[in-house]
Length: 414
Image (cartoon, rainbow, N blue to C red; front, top):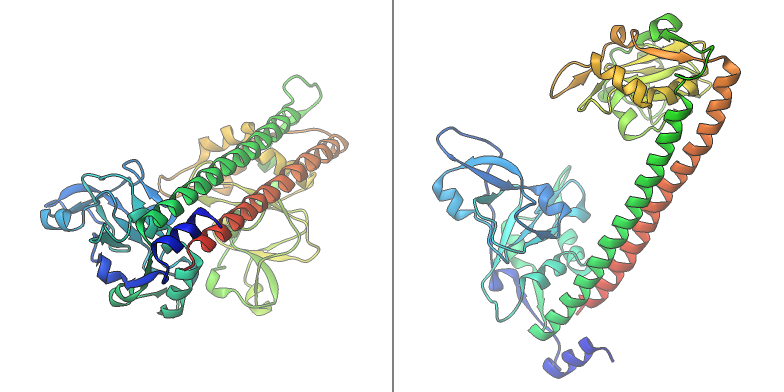
């Protein structure tokens, strides 16, 4: 018999009681909007993603600046022990994610996209216990059952107040929290180690790639501008609303960042054959380049199209057609030498752009095709090792999280 089982048998032999959330806490919505008004005070906003990403909140976590009047600042403050939840989401399983304030967070208010739970029965329940409870499968099942919506799901304030909360004795709560705190700490340490390993491998790969594609000390390698050896063709007209279930393959510029790696032979999306006639088409070995991004580092991310069929491309990207080794070109686009040249030609602040005309000015070393092929074979091996690691480590993290969630659910089922 475990210590928790012994405590339950000793302190509540008749079983654990349940109370409505409103009997043990005040549930408050009506937080603060993400705006700054000249006649209000500047404060920090605890927002939706702060709660979604962090089960424990400290002064360092909220960073967004907004404004609020004195009444809102007093009404929507953040005190040690407050629990915040995500009352709605586009995904049912993400409703009711919670975070507990581990300290008073001064000059901070919470967003109207989240709710605050402030306990008023400290002799019955602790903030740390109810925070773990909200992340348990038992409570999530109850929340999902009550959730309503079409594109976004959630519960009303009244529904949240009616949620049934188990109230084991405080010594039982303390023991459960102690165990789960240990699991949480171990999980965080493991994730940090795995992510550090991944970053180390990526850095090693980038080092060798930069070395292989630097020809300063090698004779006989000429440099050309991209405009001298190829042609940039800008995409046109394709928007996400044009996607169909099947038809002609298409690539939207945003998908280059979120879906594709360095190479692709299948598309995620399609358009009708009739609509495809109006669009610019990419052929096998063309380089697909996103010419718009939110940051300088990502803009011009390349994807080599390896499929046999022609596909169509969207605005804010272009294709580069050339007679060199396409993989060699894509790998060079990822080097420090290319990045340093690219930065000279970017425009914009919130949205970063690079035009095809400016890309055409970038210089690139062009060794003979056999040498390009030799370099590509080496980098393909490094790329595969990095990809395998990139896919394997998240799987390891997921497995450990599932193990942790299993024990958490076992501990929080009454």
